[in-house]
Length: 239
Image (cartoon, rainbow, N blue to C red; front, side):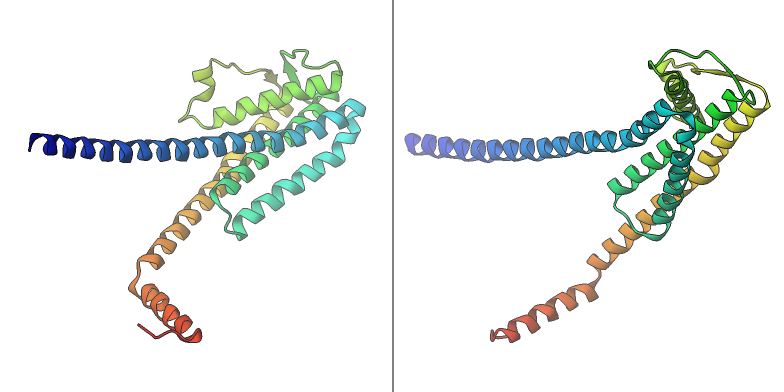
């Protein structure tokens, strides 16, 4: 009797242990796949975002005038990106990626405008650091860092600059540099972040509507009748 009980206990322990091991293995595989997808997505986004900077570097290394047509292309990219967010219902990853690229294009546009005004003496900045061998690209890269700092400073709730101990890369003075800084902040706050909030709200509403459709009895009846029709088509008896 004791031996039988002991055997039953051992079998139960082995059974629950196997279930636990299988569950842990499935969980590790699931979380590992999510982590791998997340890392791949981050690298993909970073790789895609490097293209505008690479093209800007190439044009500015040749001659600063080549940056003008590229800046026009960037402006059209921002415009069409915002229009796609308004019209299409994109997925979460695609929407976040589109917003990041739009922000980067905006930074590139204002960096080029700041370079032009600085070159012709209409805007004044101090604190330039040597970022590259080519002087034009080195100055433009300083402006990219400056407007990236401005972007983080626009979002006071996160306090990214304060948390990282990152001071402004450049010190601006004069009317022209002030107008560009205000224009960049206004573009980010009144246009880009506004469009991002609108897209996020529309995405939430679409997800809520989809969940309600899945839970509604009418959709279940429709699926049931669809199964009945499909079974009749293939000659099965309706249930």
